[in-house]
Image (cartoon, rainbow, N blue to C red; front, side, top):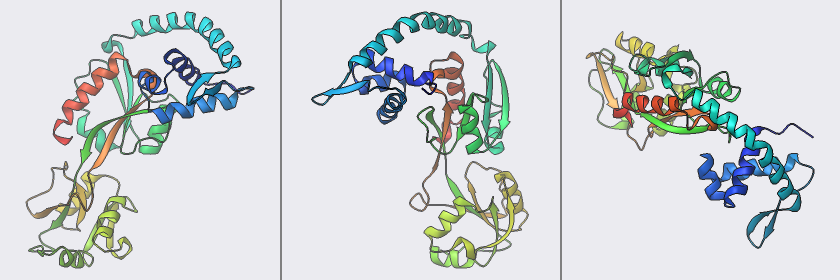
Length: 294
């Protein structure tokens, strides 16, 4: 029989205690579909079914009842150990937290945190950040996509709005009509944030311009670098509105919400940390840093 992850056992015991899928999901801090998937995954790993139905209500089989009773007896001692460990780590000033995100995101708040514990900042893109939290080499991450995993919790932190930035030396006066503007932009040198630039690709497509037809002359993986290149008059681009280093020699045109909705960023962590004192304090600190970007 395969080794059963602890979080699946916790999901099973919590459901047994509440006898209600919705109440159990709330208690665990995950969605109802996520809990259902966990219970299904546990049942598939066991030699016999642990659930059956009485009408529309999910109840335990005889095997499930026996399993619950034996697990609860063994978990009582483990609970005491967990509570003691929680007490030992209840002081945020003694915490050591590994936080990962893209460099440009870390730069936006790293020097503004008042968190009393020790922090290690790690530059990382979305996928390796999520992987690091799952394999426990990271404690917390900031990403722009909700992880496709029932083993992680994601809480909204801030939103990025976008703007077109165009050097005035390339375009003295932007055309009033959007179609005319994009006809002209498609012929001018363009700067991309990575390649392909997903944001620029979606914004241009919304204006009936193929990303492949843009005149890309520079590619960089940092929005501050993009801003510097635009300020230097090398090309135009689309960047988040939080980038405040755009000079007065650049036209700034907000991207309409209907063209490209704000990009939501999330704080991601493992479910067992949801009650940790350091996590509550960190979220409070981060919310203060991004108060104007909700």
